[in-house]
Picture (tube, rainbow, N blue to C red):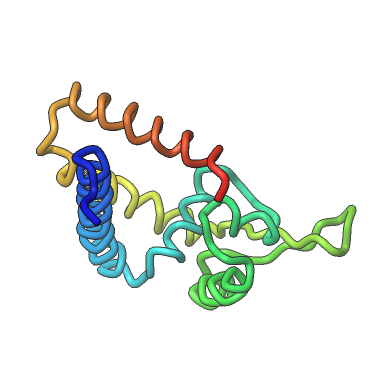
Length: 149
């Protein structure tokens, strides 16, 4: 069965986006790993650094990680003394993840380099091309959210 030109183009775009994402993700992951973290640990620390303490139950949804994996990641970051758990004084069922001073210093040192790595990756595009790509990819993402299978 032959696909239409439109379907071929859609499939090609999907493959190209997937490969580009994978290449970028792998490159950024290597940079993060050079600091002794994995990408998930970095995502949790970055969230806490920029957004403040967070309930453990909500972290997974904010960084797109399964809730079962959060405990493992939090444990690893706690052992590295980059964050700590804090019980909610109003609800014993809730525990917060809080970045430590050591964690703040670590991210404050690392994050500017992280931004430079991402800027280096994106430097192949002009500012106008970046804005266009953001708009178009966001448009696809929002459309997909409303699709039902």
